[in-house]
Amino acid sequence: FKMVCGGGLAIMPREAITVREFVSLDEYLKVSEAVIRIFNAADMLRKNRAMARIKVLIDRIGVDRFLEMVDDELAQPWAQRDFSPERLLFLDNEEERAPARRDSYAQPGDDAEAFTQFVASNVKAQKQQGFSTVQVKITRGDLTPAQFHGIADLMREYCGGNARTTVQQNMVLRWVRDESLYEVYSRLVALDLAESGAETVRDVVSCPGTDSCKLGITSSMGLNRAIQERVTDLALDDPQVSKLHIKMSGCPNSCGQHHLGNIGFHGAAMKVDGHQLPAYHAFIGGGYEEGNGKVRIGTQLKLRLPAKRTPDAVQRWLELYQQGRENGEEFNAFFDRIGKEPFEEAVRDLTIPGDFSDDNREMFIDWTKFELYVLERGEGECAV
Image (cartoon, rainbow, N blue to C red; front, side):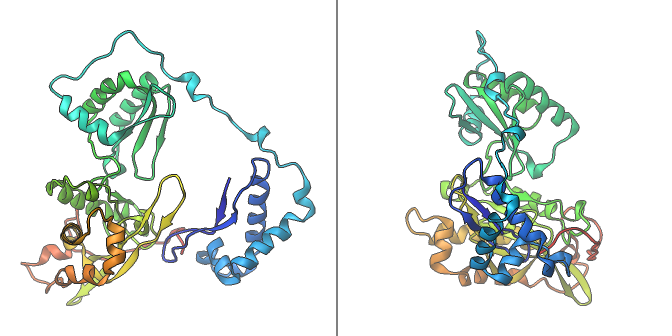
């Protein structure tokens, strides 16, 4: 394994440092314990619970000193015992439970076009020949009890009981036989879970925000709905735009991983004429690459957007990219080339909320809410 530590988001986003370029299976628990022991002994971090993070320790003492401390720990007597993980491992043979092939399967009919679109965006071939994974796009990460039970039935019948959740708030059904893809799709249609576009610009991610979190500043779930509806209404068939990720959090703590979206937002508040209104800070150019562990933290723009105007900002930034990119230029590369100023100028007029009045009352009410916005926060465990 390659071992890294000290990464994190929130108000101090940091990319993890490399502790070891390669650690064998028999050694990774030992190196992990060394890092934990160093962190546990860092009394300087105990003065403020919000600062009790490995990334803070690395910031204070430096990467080189931290790596020296890891080497010193590994030379201690505790590190000389056997750290082989074999006795701790639970090896689940998923392939053994994979469904057997049947004699016949249902085939597409009038829904063939919709099924083809679903396969193109939500289905990927597994390494094991004859099997695929099916990604179920779960809007805003919300499932009803009936949908949960329906997915469980699908897992038992078509996946050998295997599924995974994803950072995109979706579910991936594994070990689906290629011949049964249409049957799985049909069952998802019945559950209202057969929407195509998994991991595309329409697959918007958010934390619960003020819907359920004491630390929430804004209704990030409500903004998620508004942006997803706007992007869907735009009917974008641009493959370069389609691959973008939009993420948002209801506060700076980044549970929605807004730093890692090509376009990201975190909740804030504004005040006009003594009245508060929900707003968002914006980040551009974040991202991550599957398979190689590379991440890129988005750049914060120098502006705040009223919550009700944030979907307009997303639309303008997508148009800015479409109109100004060079041939084949990715969104983040486009941002690197032109800088953040054009993105700021494209939405400058949207940052002015207007006066508090009956005609402008909606600006002072958060998405999916019905009363005037008031910032209320409680205590929580989130930190920097």
